[in-house]
Image 1: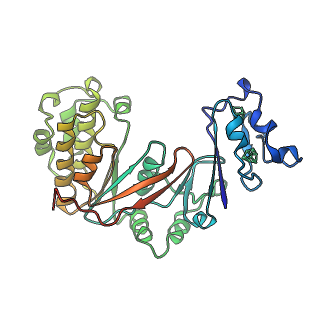
Image 2: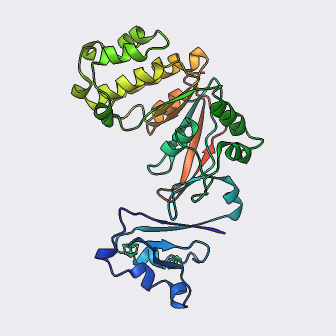
Image 3: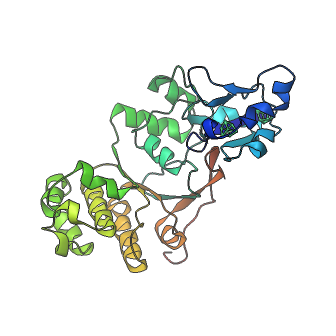
Amino acid sequence: MVRIATIDVELCKPKKCNLECIRFCPINRTGTKAIEIREGSKKPIIYEEICIGCGICVKKCPFKAITIVNLPEELETDLVHRYGINAFKLYRLPIPKEGMITGIIGKNATGKTTALKILSGKLKPNLGCIEKPPEWDEIIRAFKGTELQRYFKKLVDGRIQAILKIQYVDVVPKYLKGEVGKLLTRVDERNIVQDLKIELGLEKIWSRELKALSGGELQKFLIAATLSKDVDVYMFDEPCSYLDVYERMRIAKIIRRYAVQKGKTAIVVEHDIAVLDYLSDLVHVIYGVPGAYTLPRKTSNYRLASRA
Ligand code: SF4
Ligand code: SF4
């Protein structure tokens, strides 16, 4: 068994507790350290190779900061990324299928955004090696014989390009200033911005400053900006948040039309099952324990009767 021990640094408050996690650990009571206060930090560290996974610290922590999960050892070879010691682990990745839309669904904090960041090349996966993260050559070798090996090779060599529509649209006005129409015209590499203006219903906000937009308007602005880039793989992290049911279906149709129907590839993370159902050619369901680990699993080939 492989032990995954995570400590939520936001929840862990050593100054407000009695260090119950350390005091009640049965291994610590034998004189060996399975958990202790980390050197140079005021927060605890759990040594996963020593911890027996009894879960006593999980129950004793007054702030529910600890999660302990036991997983089969074989899975360790599939580890793609870990954010740090006692932090979240991502096993396996969804595989982008050329010319198709791959849907991803799963609970919050199960690594969907991390998977998109890795697949778009924004985050280099560390394969669980936190102290000495591997270079791309090693990462590509780790995926030997899989579709992901070919995908990453092309991405790293610059033979394919990917773009990611971020999840939190409300941060955009902090980094980008200007009028909607001017900004979209500037990024339009496919000569589609006038069509998108009509299809996304952007006419009313065309002359408006970005900082004056609502969440839904920012969402549509970002979708237009993403689709306007001439890349091979389009990734959308929750494209339907802030939008009503009518707008969600409109967005789904537009993503299909401007991505896959033009021979491109797309990956969409979405909580709205109806939208994902309409959009996706195949779906990866992410399962695991939020904040601890995650494992994407592909559903069998999935094409919807509604679109067949
Ligand atoms: S994990 Fe819980 S019990 Fe342990 S130090 Fe943090 S808050 Fe206290
Ligand atoms: S799970 Fe049990 S053995 Fe591991 S650190 Fe917590 S109390 Fe100690």
